[in-house]
Image 1 (cartoon, rainbow, N blue to C red):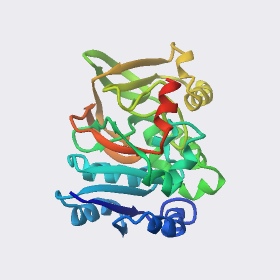
Image 2: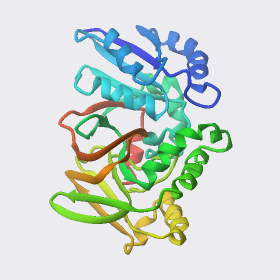
Image 3: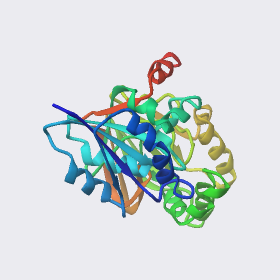
Length: 310
């Protein structure tokens, strides 16, 4: 069985098409490794899956590089989730790159170094099964998902900082109200009231660097759950600050924190949800850790440093 590589590039990802530029700058380095590789370019949402299905076979071992941001990575995860002969690497060039943030600030530049990834180590990570699609990092209902919906309309503001589109989205979301009713069951424990945010995490960061679940591990077989109770506009700024820094647990009066195997969330009418930043509108989510696992490449030493801190 031969080893083959596929670089799936989102030309629109990153500031000024950074994904495309970074790959072109790395071509000579890729060639120096004498690997059998192809490059494919996405043209629209969902195109990554089509490109992978056209090129990947079952007779060879494949390494697929997600050349873009979290959206590109999510598309690739959904395309390969049942393929045991595929390993995924995130050649990061998006503005968020939230999944790999958990491995530490000092490690982030390594994911933009093609040699570090080609020579990296493969680790097995959990995948969130939502019933309709898969997520590697996060899924949520509520204020943050609606903010992410508006964030997409303000992507131009990323030139002012990675969090700026999300911050503007937060302001826009205020116009629709902070808390809404959600019926939530966490491993049989039932909560039914108005909530501000319900985040179900496999990773630690989303929204361009917000850190709701600082203790989450991507391979412990559990979902990390954070629910923010109903708060008012005066509490919102404090909540967002704590939410961003990973300190929300210091306010147990406004949050519910659990680790779980299964979570169900229902809303009286369809509401905005996000799965790895991909926006959808639905009235129910049934979440669990998938039976499938993802083979994921980390630069050498990154995993050991990460686990040593945890």
